[in-house]
Image (cartoon, rainbow, N blue to C red):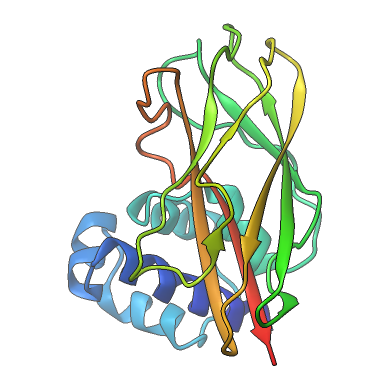
Length: 201
């Protein structure tokens, strides 16, 4: 059901960015017809180039799109393309609660990601900041900012956040980004890390 999972993720990102399919088509250079097929889960196979264009338009990492679309196939590490090789992050794995995991309504759970510093400078004084607003997510973070341990180039680090699931059943997503000591987003064009779960009663 990976095409359905991808369609749901696309709808969530379009809603979060307040983009219409017409605007998304213009930004991506992909036809509206293709966007509608993706949103209706009518595409059995998608070109890698299409997924990359869609990811760029929705300000998310291409790896996120591929992981959802290929649903369980192992995908190698891909680094954020920022144009600045000093600060580059690479996604490694969802350590806990992979995409579409079931979470009981009203419970607090811990989401953990593993990422790598694949740039040339250390990450010092950074934090992971929740980017959600009340109208884009119903997952409530216990803390909206979590410190990232100082991470040298080539090192891996696991980052954990605690989230409270809502009282009603739903499919929802929470977005997180790295910020520096001044509070500035380090990778502004990337969607960052996300937790996408199905809340069950």
